[in-house]
Length: 149
Picture 1 (tube, rainbow, N blue to C red):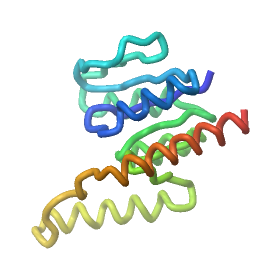
Picture 2 (picture 1 turned 120 degrees about the vertical axis):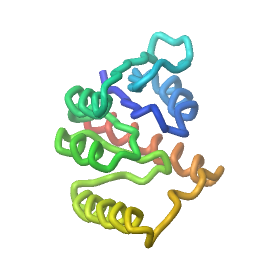
Picture 3 (picture 1 turned 90 degrees about the vertical axis):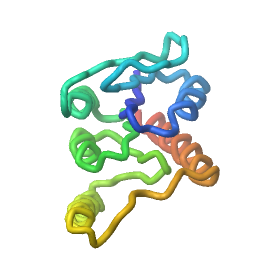
Picture 4 (picture 1 turned 30 degrees about the horizontal axis):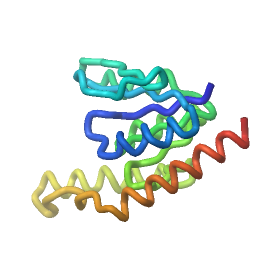
């Protein structure tokens, strides 16, 4: 059975994922540092991993070819791509083997710029357009994975 893994602690599109997963009858693993409310549904399961980095480690160890991972964590995305998972960020952008190296480099550069005060702030807030794009891209990803398997 194909799975959707959610790096859940800061994921703003969990409700959207639940709706789409129900439509396709896909199992969802909501992986988080702390307990959180999830829908009562046999297809949706909460997995708690409390230690630093344990959520990322668990997802990277468990995921595999044909699974879908939802995360904004770029190093986690790279680890999941190496295991042949399909990886989307919460705005619907797909990480690929072709671009993950440059995305990691940009992440490191931006981190350095934030540390020295050159750049302040974080990502823009989620908009309805972002959510709509995410839903469309998740639907495309599920259909692509189903065709391959």
